[in-house]
Length: 183
Image (cartoon, rainbow, N blue to C red; front, side):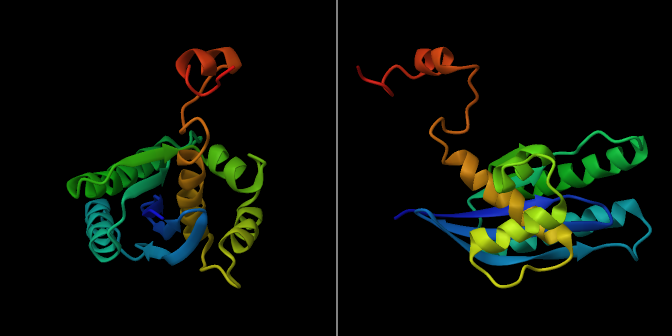
């Protein structure tokens, strides 16, 4: 069976969550999860460097095959969105510097993938991850479980029958995949 290691990231400039899973066939195993807390550091540039360095350390330690990162969502605070985008960009740059491909997932997509409901709470997602990963306790804070959810979502999406591609309906699917259904 082929193994794949996925690094999931919940980006942030105060707290960045990370979760690392190993997938062997259909078995998902938790390798590590936690957070990088940068609340004490006031300078944004230093925080961004901390994110880059931490990402490089995780990549060098766990040798992930892919990065799954939560996409920024549109909120009311433009400054927060800009900072979040910078954190996301730095995490992606770290992965790309080690030739690791990445995929972004919207928060609703992640929640839908894990719980079946795009409006689930962080606590509901965490509870479902305990079941999916067959573990007793998840790491805290919830930034770590958000990152794990992103990694698990990526696994589910990349193993979907459509290979993660989106189609507008059966006609579109069949047109683009003529060998999938033989009549």
